[in-house]
Length: 211
Figure 1 (cartoon, rainbow, N blue to C red):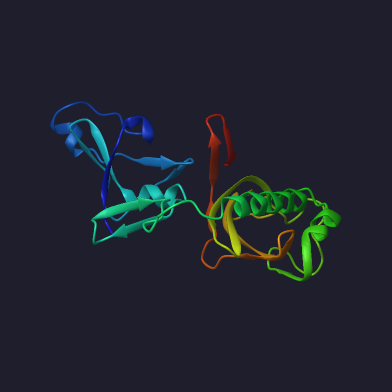
Figure 2 (cartoon, rainbow, N blue to C red):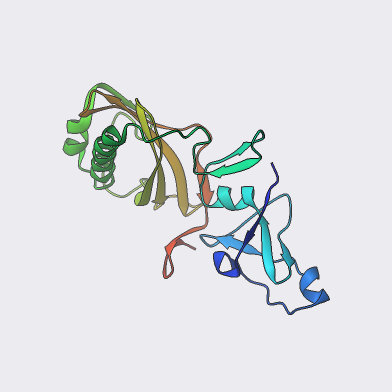
């Protein structure tokens, strides 16, 4: 899907300085998200002093889900096309808090606290049979964001600063948590094809991880 969205100049970092007139129209601006150049099949354009960028490129760069409803000719970014009302809000909060406790215990190498939250027969591909220790070959989690929830699972986008790899500096993955009852985690699995490798990741101005 190729959809063009108009964004203000403050919404992206432009490395090209341009002036009004025909020269501005000929310039192809560069757009960066979290310090990484945005790649898209359709190049950004400057029209009447505003930058137009394909919506797909921006949403992918921000890790946002995007859906196109052909019937209503509407684009949904991090939104449910079939939204009818709030559901499962109480269960979401409980499960989110349990998942965040698990993630923080894992990130701080507190194996005992991780195991307290795991159900019997717990499964994961986040780590092998031996729980990781120390800092070698294990990323440090710098950000986590819930992105999808249903009656049986919660998916969290994990941004890690990698400490023992040479080919990249930041890794983004979606971790899907499933539950057993209301107080135990049944499994934590990496969603297929969700892993993205970046040179850098900017949490907010002045705080970046990577080269």
